[in-house]
Image (cartoon, rainbow, N blue to C red; front, side):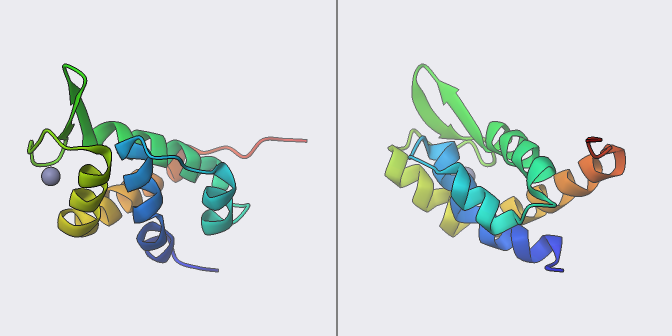
Length: 107
Ligand SMILES: [Zn+2]
């Protein structure tokens, strides 16, 4: 099975796109995470996205370092170039925290 760190690394662009308000496709998220980790990773992505973006008066600012305002594209580039390692850590930590308490649905 692929490690959580590897998945987190592959998710940086998806998370950065979503945080920037650029279009994202749920199918891509599912493809990156795989079926078994998808339910938790979907929550993780939303948690991390809300932590890394700070909208002030309709302008995009960085939730990690406070810089901005950015355009959508500018913020995407800022996140993927400047904060890549932080985003990977945030995804990994958030995943491990949620996975501890996760009870798989019964069918
Ligand atoms: Zn920043």
